[in-house]
Length: 578
Image (cartoon, rainbow, N blue to C red; front, side):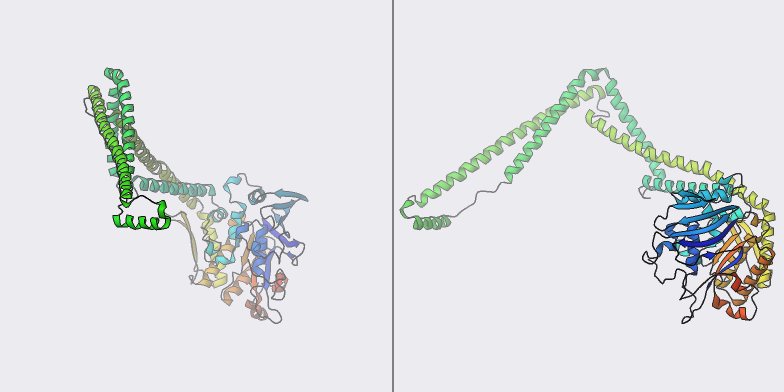
């Protein structure tokens, strides 16, 4: 059992809120000058409780309060009992991952939320023999402290609808008497199959080049490639094992080296010729241009220039002829060398081929070095495709022969559990019908636990609950209320239930339904005053008329643990969340 006792801070930033067994109301009320009852801090008060109960910092609205309004170093504290253990949980926003738990006047410091959660979990299941088959501390709290932003639309999913957190059946199944180790195994195995499907999809894309090829065509290519590599390998091995190979191996190696040197020189000559061919041609200057230039110099320099124009022309001609002679001579030398290299390369190639034919007859290999290069490339391609196909086949067989049969076995175990728990289900359904009759004056309701046929569904189990006229927003909220309180009060489910339930603004329903729900809770408190704790946030304007008319049997004033208004907010401040 979990019993909350007091919420407060050090230093004090709001009046400590003391909780008792039974019904506890946190009320939003009107104040002088304002008739509004929303935005006064009811939900934030619940967020502070949740923060002390180890809600993750990234999901908590407590961390969004501006620092200048509420210092990070403030200690947020919650006194509570878990079973018979008196505790105080302390967290700050400055170090949100650190938790202090005071137990029997001893301070225990935890450096992480999971460590603190594990400690509280051990206290919660202190009398149970095997703690590995239970929900974690935070898992179990999820259906007991529904987020207002869940809009109370779903029996199982109690989280903010915008966060798209998948539903978690484990705490519900645990309270309903199931051995959840089987369902845990199912969830883990389903995840393994999802990962295997992802692996198969990625391998298929890689093998088929994003679906452009057929995987069976790749298998055919693999067979052809294996044959090709086998023949290449055989030819190379025949060369190596041939008696004549050893005798001519040195000759082959020498020829390869000589060919490599000759081909390198051949490339260098081609490059030099190309450079010469790209040199600019001698500029063709007309006699008229030379005459003009000559006269300009002669006028400026007088008798210093004595050479005639004809001498200038002869001089230019000599220079051009000299340049052309050098270039042409160089080109001729390079071209002759290139021709000689081509002859030598041809001779060496023929000599190499002749030696290869001595041992291979020219059937497979024309060039040992090239053959080995082709063999290595083909072998690499073969090994890659073979690895991909083998990985695909092994993953497919593992999914087909191991994972899926195991999943089917777990489905059978879950079905057997549903049958074995039929007595609990019937009793729970009867409790739902009893509550439904009180609230809605009808027994037109049902609750069933079924399994899903879809192979793609992550959750094999499904809860099917119907109440009268369900489907509308307000009726769905009523359905969630009936389900939650039935879990807390049913003779079987209350054995595993922590006896704590917190509803933040659930009663956005019609007035008659609201009255009947509160009256039902009041009756439960009269009959079982110490067996549960129910904390409810509610706006006073929703119930004040019914109070005056004495339609509500619950004493609102005596059950009110906090009363917030626009002028008396929860933290005493007005702010915008950062």
